[in-house]
Amino acid sequence: MAIVKNTVYMKEVELPFCPGCGHSQILPQLDKAMAKLNLDPRKTVLVTDIGCVGLSDQYFNVNAFHGLHGRSITYACGLKMANPELTVIVLMGDGGLGIGGTHFINAARRNIDITVIIFNNFNFGMTGGEHSVTTPFGGKTATTYLGNIEYPLDACSLVQAVNGGFAARTTIFDKNLADLIAEAIAFKGFSAVDIWEYCTAYYVPRNELNKEKMMKLLETYGFKTGIVHKVERKEFIESYHEIYLNQPTKQFKQISLDTEFENNLTQKTGIIIAGAAGQKVKSSATVFGSSAILAGLYATQKDDYPITIMTGHSVSEIILDKKEINYTGIDNPDYLIVIAPEGLAKVKKIIQNMPETSTIFVDDQLLSLLPDTKAKIESYPFKKAANAIDRFSITILSLATFLARTNLFPIEAFKKAVTLTQKKAIAEINLKAVEAGLKLVEENIYAK
Image (cartoon, rainbow, N blue to C red; front, side, top):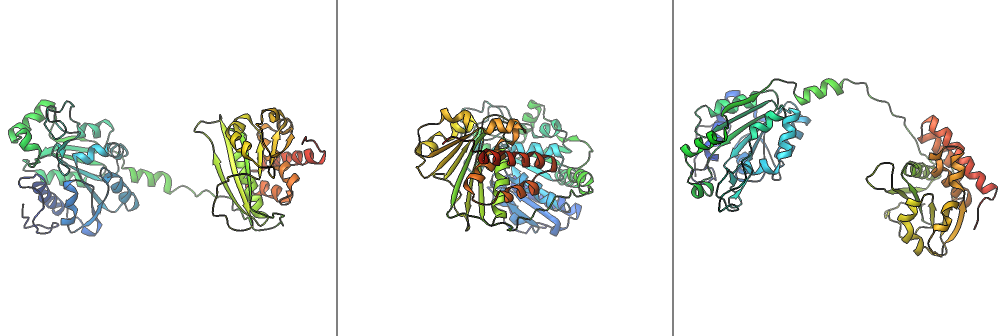
């Protein structure tokens, strides 16, 4: 094991790495780079993840963050964005580079001011020498014992491809390694240093790797050393501050749902609205739940819809109770409102299991499509009535009809919620829909 002495930021300790491991050679060079820059240890963070190099942060007298394999760059970005004054340095192996490749690419693309130092020894050293994204073609590892058939990843070219700020490649034999690391850390923007080194436990014995062969590999792949890419462009956090932080704060309408109305609820009540995308099922259910709160009730809402837009089912479940609701599932609804065939298809099994104490409110055009059920059925021309106002108002209209029939709480609470929670133009349409829904009940336009 290597004993480190004469350090500035590193503790004078015996490092835990295998004899000859490149990590023991790189870390003192990092210490020299940090000393050259005279970094404030209170504002410097070393970020690591799983792997042999992940043991390194504890040997430096600076802040440290150690996390999951391949996720070090995400932590680093979060730290830097939360406090741009920090100098954030990621120490990761080629294993972490492969696992966190997307994070590497996007941090470079965004040009976030962090430095990523890649301890590249061509395999997963901590877990037994499996091949990694940088294992050379033909390289023998625990998982490619006949020779690797994949070509190695060029980390510097990735940075260049996404127009990241700074990328350099070097080896543990570079006499100016500390200076190169210092230049990367000092660079304003994303920087990466790909350092080729030895894993003496696994890769070197299996491939008889030495300095000459390492240099030959660089030549074979046409991998340049030194500063491979450097471009001056706006750093991500600076751009964010310029564009977003000076914008006027958008003022949002403050809504108060204090109790204003009485209610007639006698027990916990489950209501399901089964409609289709485009029928404003979710937003209408929210308005209804808000009106219940205005009437002194607790209300929950759970929605179900596919990933597609403006097509497929849209189902909302609402629970009302006079006390706090801890379980938000509806096993058997007390009421079910069906306004579209897509929603009906989604709730058919529920309908079949509904008891005779439950009630279904269904659009008259869907009545014949209902499966056998013990529940009471009331049908209304919801769609026809809504089309006379605005086809998107069908859910509000059907909920108004339902509320007028059940009298769970005053319709005035529903109207108040429409006015409070919706934009004026939409509220005007929906208030007409509420009146139309009431009319269906007042004129007895339904069939049992």
